[in-house]
Length: 249
Ligand code: ADP
Ligand code: MG
Image (cartoon, rainbow, N blue to C red; front, side):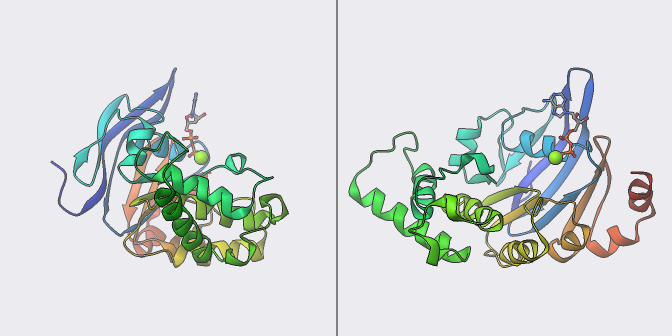
């Protein structure tokens, strides 16, 4: 019974790894077009929450729905076809290939019939169009024909974002998109994320609290696998429970 207009609903999700209870009855409602941040100390269960939602680690208990449709237990491939994407790791880049070809390959994966790389010219043309649009959106149009290996660390992060955007997701999960970047690179990538299209629903994990407060409509704080608080940035900033988690961390 997912409410109308909810892009993502997580209901009472738990997940254990051996004896470790990584998530305990965590719930989350994300309306379509919302910006939701998930914060919390290391080991809080943030990445596990993403792995549960994206189908990589099915929940031990609880339910997940996407656009009102129950998706609990569906494979990552099925979920990608339903419009769910998460940020690529750097290792998914082909450094020898051009920046554009990296994005075209990602765009082809987002078209129907995703397993075959060969497709009619019309499909390839559409993938190239989507790739060019995604590159322009991520400020890399001018680098399209250079090899990916020539990009700086920050530009590679921009390329990874272009690769997920070229798949035209409706819900995008970003796990620490600013991690490991220099201050100027952070500012650049942060602004690109803040300017993503409003019809794209975003859920983001990030340690940079200042960025989360700028980015999010709502913030969920996890600690030790449990939901400590969920609220607006103002509510989270003022929450004694949240301060206890961060002082205690
Ligand atoms: P976060 O992303 O908030 O730092 P994680 O979701 O990665 O936290 O991890 C939450 C807890 O679950 C940690 O105690 C972690 O060690 C444990 N955990 C996560 N994945 C696994 C796994 N595949 N096997 C065993 N333990 C895991
Ligand atoms: Mg993590």
